[in-house]
Amino acid sequence: MDSPPCDRLPDTAAPPQGTAHPLATAEHPPERPVVTELRLSAFRAHRGAVLPVRPLTLFAGASGSGKSSALEVFEALALLAGGVPLGGAFPDPAGCVPDGARADRQGRRGFRVGCTAEGPAGAVRLDLAVQAEPRLRIVGERLTGPDGRTLLATALRDPARPVVHAEWHTAGPTPVTRAPLPDDRLATALAPLRVAGRTDGQLRVLAAAEQILVALRSVFPCDPQPHRMRQPVAPGEGRLRRGCDNLAEVLYRTRADCRTRHARLVAAAGAGCAGPVRGLEARTLPDGMLRAVLERAAGGVVTPLERLGDGELRYLALSLVLLTGPGVLAVDQALEVPGAMQALTVLADGLDRDLDARQARELTALAARICGDGHMRLIGTVGGTGAAAARGTAGATLVELPGPEDREAGRTR
Image 1: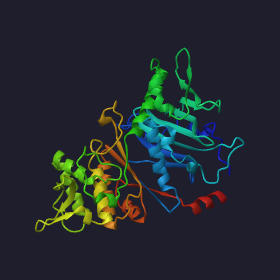
Image 2: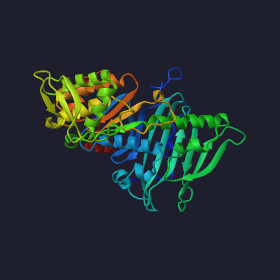
Image 3: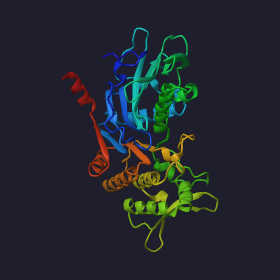
Image 4: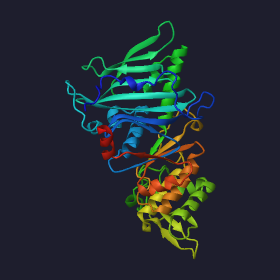
């Protein structure tokens, strides 16, 4: 089956007039802009996939079901929202093209993704069409307001030029403003720099664009690497990295910064690690390096973290992520927006990797409690252990994706 032409957005990019996301109401918009839906319209193994995003969302499914693709799209949109060029957001664009998609007469192949962000402006949609071959470029983008009105749209008019034709709503003497924009940047991210904000229409464009950008910007992809967490680390700024390899450095900081939060981390360690736990800290070695240790409750025994198993180390690192925030995690927040108006989204591919059933239950319960207050959201992928934990945890949303065989059966029925 051919993929849709990638030089225009599909007719389904905008919802019917008056359609709103089920979580959105005019009376009770979310306090902070948040992503509530991901659309993998044509991306890798997905065609027409609409995935809900709740405060704690876990994707499960067989190998090849495309669980990781949802996190990949979220992170890519976040990078684009932060001003990263298209090639930095999609380093393997050819691999993003839907399975089996054939090139058109001009040799073009591409993919389509999108999201919905809810907040004070209502449910705002962003849809993106990307040409992966023969040259990576954005060939269509549409920003849609809660009433179904297209507020900003771009389209490729001249394939020989590295620009797209952009139009945005003005609602003044000139109803639409037109201008060329670069084809490797998200037009929505450029809107605050290009839209004047003098008319009601321009203000609606800016409100919708800023809501999308704020909802996407504060993202922390996290994949703890136990083999790198076992080594002593040098003191630094104390911001946890994606692989959590500087765990000892961050523990050294957090223990001094907030005793209450650190006590919660120690309690979490006691719930997920073998044997009793009285403390969790980083100690300075003679050469100035930092080593993380567990203090046992009996006899003052100290266990260096490098002796723990992979599951215990991943459990501790993920618990630390949940119990900290943007000030500790290496997150690119929107600096022009107060932190209280932003919700941090943690992306955890393989959340339950190496965890046993008890650790998965404890970590999922901790995530549900933390995500319940609205300051943090977590989107992860899980296997059977994590899926079972999610089914038994209030506040966890488990999204089970069909496997390749199920999708094929659905297409042939």
